[in-house]
Amino acid sequence: MLRITNLGKSYGSARVLSGIDLDVQPHDVLAIIGPSGSGKSTLLKCINFLERYDEGEVRFGGQLVGYVEAGGRRRPATERETNRIRAEIGMVFQNFNLFPHMTTLQNVIEGPIRVRGVARDEAVRDAERLLAKVGLADKRDVRPTKLSGGQQQRAAIARALAMRPRLMLFDEPTSALDPELVGEVLTTMRELAAEGMTMVIVTHEMSFARDVASRVVFMEGGRIVEEGPPGKIFTNPDNARTREFLARVLH
Amino acid sequence: MQYQWQFAIVLEYWPIFARGAVTTLQITLLSSIIGLFIGLLVGVSRESAGTAVRVVTSIYVELIRATPALVQIVWLYYCFPIIFGVQLSAMTSIIVALGIHSGAYISEIVRAGINAVDTGQFLAAKSIGMNHFTALRRIILPQAGQKMIPPLINEFANLMKLTTLGSTIAVYELLQESNNLIATTYRPLEIYTFLAIFFFIITYPWIWLSQRLERRLKMRA
Ligand SMILES: Nc1ncnc2c1ncn2[C@@H]1O[C@H](COP(=O)(O)OP(=O)(O)OP(=O)(O)O)[C@@H](O)[C@H]1O
Ligand SMILES: [Mg+2]
Image 1 (tube, chains in turn purple, blue):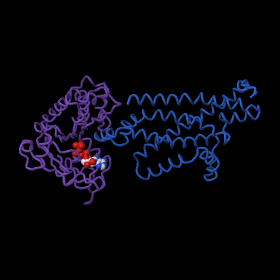
Image 2 (image 1 turned 60 degrees about the vertical axis):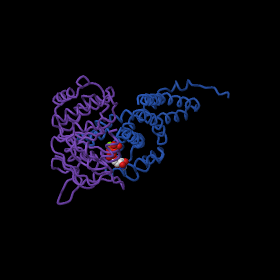
Image 3 (image 1 turned 60 degrees about the horizontal axis):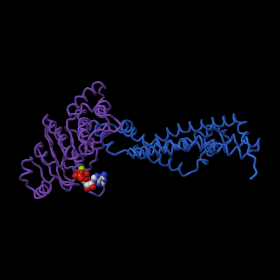
Image 4 (image 1 turned 180 degrees about the horizontal axis):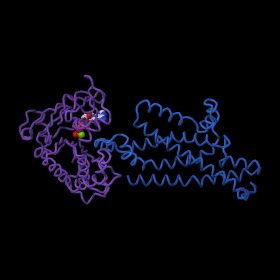
C-alpha cells in the first residue's frame, strides 16, 4: 500500500533523511520510534508530501507521491494531483491543529464537503457517527478551545477519519497531553487498529507500540537503524544503538 | 491676545461644511473599498502566488510606501493623463490614488494577519487534501481576519485624514471648502479651528475602537 524507496531529504546543507526504505501493507500498524531530531516527523510529512523530498520515491497505492513520471524523467505533481493522494491519507498532529473558528462538527464535515464533495446532510450524519465513535457525541456544537487536550485529539482523529482514509499518519499524538489524558487517545487508536486501519505512528509511548504495532522502526540521524516486530525490537534488538535508546527511554 | 472669536460664522455657513463633509466621506469610503480590494489581492498573492507575481506585488508595495501620498495624487492627476492620454476628474484621481495608496498598507496588514495564523492550520488543511485557495478562504483568512480588524480600522482613520490632500487638486472636500470660505469671510482662525475639531470628532472614534479591539484580542490570546 505504501512503499518508500531510498528516500532522502535535506534542508539546505543539513541532511535530514537518507536511504529510507519502508514497506507498509494493508492493516499494518507501524510504530516509528527514535530520539528527538532523528527525522521522524519529516519522514511522516514526506508520505503525504507536506514536505517535499529530494531523492528516492514514496509510492501510495502504486502511485508516486508529489511527482509525476513522464518519459523517464519526473516533474513536480500539480497541487490537484497531490491533493487527490492527500485526501486518502489522514494525518493527526501533536498539537491537534483543529480549526478554532469552527465547532467540532464543522471541523469534521469540512473536508468531506469541501474536498470530497459530499452533500451536507450526509457529511453531518457521517460526522455524528464518527464523533460518537470517539466519544464526543455531546461535543458536536462546541468550539475546540472548550475541549480538553484529549478530547481535541479525538476530534482531530474524527476529522481525519471523515475523509475515509486508507492510511492514517500520527505524529506523536499524545505528546502534548497531560498524562491522565493520554489513555483515552490511545484507546481510540487501539480501536482503530483493531478495525484494521493501516497506521503509521510516530510515538514515545513504548508500551503502546509494543501492544499495538505490528512492526517497529527505530530511526536515528535520518536513517532507519533497525526494523522488526515489537517482540524482537523491545526484547532483543540486533543493533546496539537501538538497545541504548530503549534502555534510556524505558527507565 | 485680544482676538474676538466668532464661531457663529461656522454656524452660518454650515451647508458648505456639510457639503465638504459629504465629499470627504465619499472619498474615504470609496478609496477604502478600492484599498481593501487591492490589499486583499496583493496581500494574499505575496503569500502564495508564483515568483513573478511576488516580484511585481512587492515592487508595488515598496514603491507606494516609499513615496508621499501627495506625490502619488498629483502624479495621477497631472502626469498620468500626459503619459496615457486619459484625464481623470479630480475626484476620481483622489479616490483612485488613495485607494492605490492604502492598498499597499492594507496588503501588509493582510500579510501580517496570514503570517500570524499558526502554521499548523495550513498543514491540517492540506493534510485533508484542501487546495491552497480553499485553505486560505475557509481556514486561514477567517482566523487572520480577526487580527486584521484593528489595523484596518486604523487605516480607515488614516484615509479619512489623507482626504485633505484632495485640496491640492481642487477636490471640494472639507479643507478645500474651508479655504474657499476663508477667502470670502477672512476668518481663518475660526474656520481652521473648527476644521481641526471636526476631523478629531470623525476620526478619533475609529482610533479608539481600533485600540480597544486590539487590547481585547491581546487579552483573549
Ligand atoms: N523547516 C526546517 N528547516 C530546517 N531544518 C529542519 C526543519 N524542520 C526540521 N528540521 C531539522 O530536521 C531534523 C529532523 O527533524 P524532525 O522534526 O523530523 O525530527 P523528529 O524525529 O520528528 O524530532 P522530535 O522527536 O523532536 O519531533 C532536525 O535536526 C531538525 O532540526
Ligand atoms: Mg517530530
